Length: 289
Ligand code: UTP
Image (tube, rainbow, N blue to C red; front, side, top):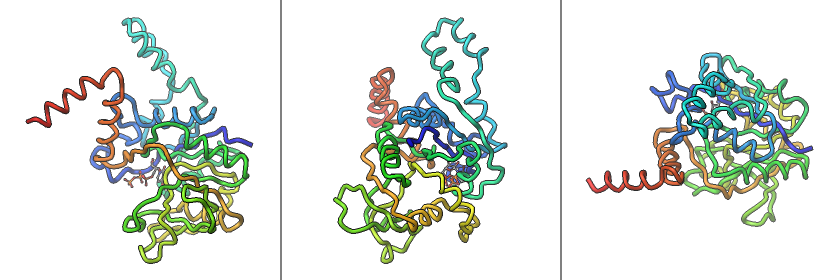
């Protein structure tokens, strides 16, 4: 079956964005005028999701507030004559079913995904890391198609220079794949030394997982930093039978750091019809100083 539920883990501490994330969840930082979380939810809906499962933390209450419909705010804005904005606000939390589930302590991405188990059920599901943005839902759609067709998890891959591989999860794949994939993944190693890396293909932030991933999460052991790593559960799946790697072709932004976030905001302001001219003029003025 095709994945219809999208899991969005948003319970992390966001330490790379301190001090901002001491009080503000990084998932709600504005990408020009839209919170990152909304863009990620839109991507999931664009790929066919009709149910979003947000894994949040009880201390990150603004996330829950953002996805909870608020008729009073909508009416107030409508009464002020800002019809378009009122419609945008009315859409939040009503155009797709949203379930919130909690990860009380951030024990890693594998643990966060495990917290979504009851809400997902025994079905394949999309998984989107909300501190990474994509220019559209095409890649996620391709992952969902692949998982439906092949019956195994499908994950987004990027090709990076060998000197960068040691910061990521790196895959081993069966020989014979075309350079642009898809790849039959038979192993994953987290942050290998460059000389030990099995390829230059790293795992990025979009996945469509078959539900047996939950059983794998149950049996993996914490990494030395105490976290349950999703890559360890995927590695176990790939040992049962190869899972699929799809090379990403969409533009991506990593908004988990201040500079990555700035890049996303600048690009959004330049591509938005309402702001492009003013943004261009502003940047030209600042660069000329
Ligand atoms: P990251 O590792 O990028 O986020 O996880 P982080 O841990 O919040 O940030 P840093 O590294 O300390 O700066 C990717 C996504 O997974 C969520 C995060 O909220 C983020 O959106 N996550 C991570 C969880 O929900 N729970 C976790 O235990 C870890």
